[in-house]
Amino acid sequence: MAILIGGLKFGAIYALAAIGVVVIHKATRTVNFAQGALVMLGAFGGFLVVVHYKLPYWVAYLVVPPVIGLFAAGLELIILRPLRRADLFTVVIATVFLGIAISEGFRLIYKAELLAVPATFTGPPVLLGNVVLTQDTMWVIAGALAMAAIALLLFSQARLGISMRAMASNPRGAQLCGFSVDKVYLTAWFLGGALAGLAGLFIGPVKGVSAELSISVISVAFVAAVIGGFDSLVGAIVGGILLGLSETIAAFYVSSAFKNSISFLLLFVVLLWRPQGLFPGEKTRDV
Image (cartoon, rainbow, N blue to C red; front, side, top):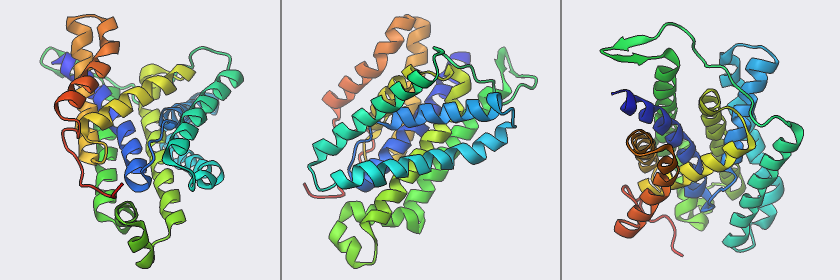
C-alpha cells in the first residue's frame, strides 16, 4: 500500500508536468523541451517565496504559476514567434536550447548543488492501517490531480480551450471565425508555463531545486505524454500515474538503478505496441 501511495504521489506530479507539454503541443504543434526548465523555475520560485522571503506557502501557489506562465509567454513572444515561419524542427531545437540556457543560467547564479524546499504541510500524519500517510503526501496527490482535472476541463469546455483546439485543427478556419493566431499561441504558452510552475511547487519539497531537475522532469513528462497519447490530456494524466507507479514499484522490487530505466523501457514498449499512445487524440491538422 505504501508503495502505491508513493507511486501515486510522483505520478500526480508527472501528470501535471505532462499536461503542460500536451497543452502547448495540442494548440501550437510544438514539442516544448524547455518545459522541464520551467518546472525547475517553478520549484525555485517556491524556494524564494517560502525560504528566502519567509512567506506562507499559499502566497507561492498564488504568485509562482502566473509568473512562470508570463515568462513562458515571453519566450513565445520574443524568441519563438519570429521563428514561426521556419520549419517545425527549428522551433523544437530552439526549445531544447532554451531549456539548456535556463538550467545553466540557474547553475551560474546559484552555486549550491541542491536547494532544499520545506514540505507544504507538516501536521501529524494519518494512519491507514499500517501505512503512515503524511499531510504533504495527501496534498501532493490531491492537489496535483485536482489541478490536472481543472486544466482538462478548461481545455475541453471553456472558450479559451475551444479557441486553442480550433487553431490546432484548422488555422485558417479559426482565423475566419475571429480567433487570433498570436493570441492563441501566447495563451497556450502561458497555460503551459503556469502548469509547469504548479508542477514545480509540488515537486520542489520532494526533490529539491537543482539544474538537474530540469532534465529529469522533461524526461518523465515527455514519456508520460507519449504513453498517454501526445494530443490527449486524459492520456497525459493516465501516463503520468502509470509512470510514477512503475518507477516506484521498480525501485522497491528491483533496484533504484532500474527505476531510472523504467521510463524509457515503458516508452519503447508503448511505441512498439501502440505508437499512437493509450488514449490517442483526434487528428488535429493534416500534415
